[in-house]
Image (tube, rainbow, N blue to C red):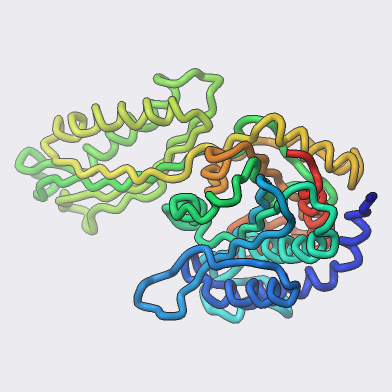
Length: 396
């Protein structure tokens, strides 16, 4: 049976838009998506789609379901379609008629759009369920924006094990790409992310008597120089890697050497082996650098998401679906990002493909992801919905 996914997606776009705007007005932070989960469940119930709740939020709450796993079709194996559902601690500045009603919380990363599209995909798949070649799992995932990541917790819970998932597919809006374009590529698409939390303990003294103290600022500067040297001296120059110190707090007077300095930062790369090597070098040398200036070091590296690596076969499937159901002009080669995404855990579990959905326009002011004025073009959902629905009918 020939299904015109683009036409169907256009027909149900008003419903997709309603979903998006409701979710945008009612954002919830990572691992607190209780009412978002209720909304998703209510829509799935209205479509008579089987589903169960994915995780629990804090044990203090009795009504604490977060995230939904839904399924359609038959078969011993399946593919999975994923949307993240959490928002960010950002105060919205868009002046939309459907702006966030939650002070200090905003869907500034497009997860409301991702969720709305997957809800419309569910409607399409339910209508054509009898023609599905395999079972389709739809994951409405909480906690993408906060470690350890909802994807990891869902996989660790083994809630997906019964479905024998052979491939995962997911998408993310990108306002840097014009609406009507979908970008992906095989191999690395997003980076790993690790967080630095550093405390250097010195000895306070009068600035005119530095020999009586231990200067944590001087020690911190030399530690920063070492960290920034790692990509240039220990990595192949052709290998993308980023180390950034993004916070430095110390002292409060002009004539006092402070007793401590606190730093924070991040490290990102597409190469897991290089990631491990750099963390080993940091652990080996940082303490000695700080001690050489009479200071003590507390250095905690919080391991974040792994690199997101697209599977060649899954990428081919996505590109073929774009060509077949949207048109060749809709595809563009993706530029890898140093962003991080917990979809990477799914890509470690089974072959996967993740893509960027263009939602920008040169005729509008540009605001990037995580900006309080993010203004994605909503019509982009037509194309993301059509593509994701079409993937449910591809061979595994």
